[in-house]
Length: 110
Image (tube, helix red, strand yellow):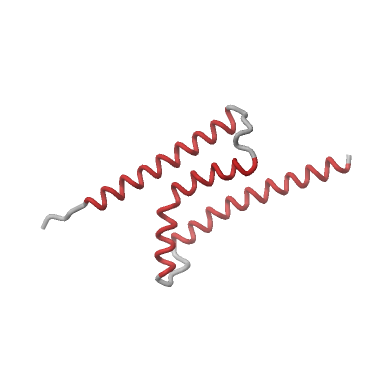
């Protein structure tokens, strides 16, 4: 019997568009941050810009994590991947905050 695959085609196209959007956002942010030496991607805007790239690619994983969590499976591969990647963002923010604090202490002591 003939199986209609329109939903799979839309899903695949949707995933491809999200991946491409995330990739372009990431490349643009790296270019603005490093090549132009611009102040555009500093502090909170910097985090927000990378968060947009992350959310574009992580959205389908987030949806699956929510689905499995509603079914009672909190520690599934989707929620664990989300926790690990969010941990990287947290770690980067903590390291940057620690560097600023150390610099402030060194500046204060001199």
